[in-house]
Length: 187
Image (cartoon, rainbow, N blue to C red; front, side):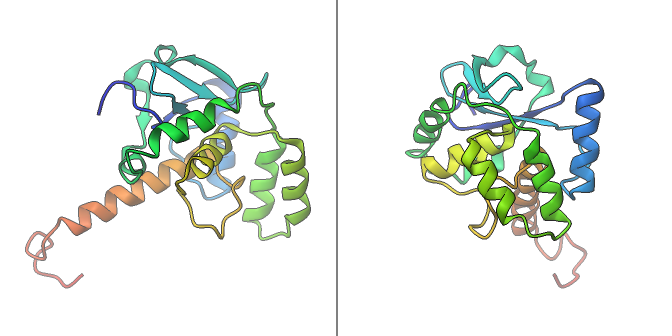
């Protein structure tokens, strides 16, 4: 994988109380308890785009230390090469889009099984996005879905991206593991 690849998803930590709050919220929402509270999208030119409280910003990829980034490479591997630049171009269009903590509430209500259609409509009407929404919607508009169409595009936390990448890694591992490797047990 090159150092900068258009459309590749990066996950990283947010330190302090905000990061811990997001981590706990993700755990409560069944998005795991891994220490990835922030998602961004590699634009392929040495820059990234990420949602921030002041609005989505394009920044140099070098703002994060390479060892502090989890790259969702299994998700990325499923994206056709011709689609990757389109995802990055769609993401650039979100520069300046405002951030919304309300989206975390929508995710929580949805995970509790409550009818959130009214909240989805409200969030859509504001145009605000959290980091993982920006990534997910950029993928969709660029021509590739990470999650099934049955899931509203806004119901994505950074932990969901991590869990999907992990699921794809495990799926590949199982496909490449023979019965003998598993001790002869039927799968």
